Length: 122
Ligand code: FES
Image 1: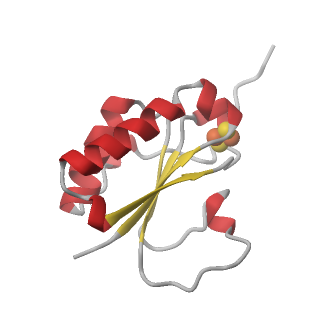
Image 2: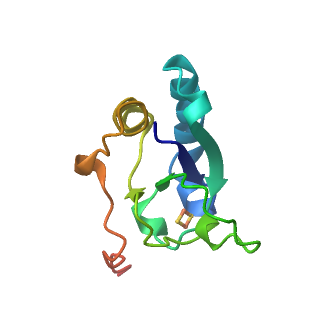
């Protein structure tokens, strides 16, 4: 059985966009769906895709040795099993827990595109 680490961005823009509610929903959904033993919940960020937030990163736990600088807490690493979800809402978070975590089925429809340029301000 796979294990995961799910990080909800704690940066200011994602917070302003509702990241705290997304985090609270993740905690609730993991408990309700009995997934707490399989998924560590964490606050990461800022990942630098603020305009795409609230951002969530899910990674498979592979027993990888932890870098003391924890670069994975504020950037995408391109690791196998790493999935970036953008524009998250509590409803989307429930779906990610129900499918990605509980069924090992990443939710492709919600995948973010980190290379999308920020919209112009003018
Ligand atoms: S505040 Fe979340 S990516 Fe920057």
